Image (cartoon, rainbow, N blue to C red; front, side):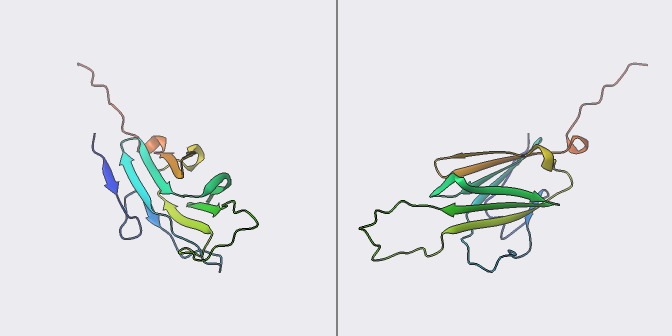
Length: 136
């Protein structure tokens, strides 16, 4: 089994996922770090989304684009006010263009401890298959 790990899809491409055009919204968003792991049956994306709950997370596929969006919701008591904030944006957004070799209808996702795991299997025609050889 040959596995390819791409640490930053923003600086390069893989045969199965690439960065797409700029976000459609004008609001500023954070670009979450994403690891892309490819194996013989598909790709798995691991996106770091600290502070995003399941309710604040949205995954969409439109055409050949996978959109990952999340809103950070931190509970701050009313009597408290931040005196310093290193991160001003409260939204994450990342877009990926999906290869025709991937089956977008079978995408699965899990969110645990601030890490989103998205599994995208390869389409049936792109799956490796064994060919039986008959003795003549």
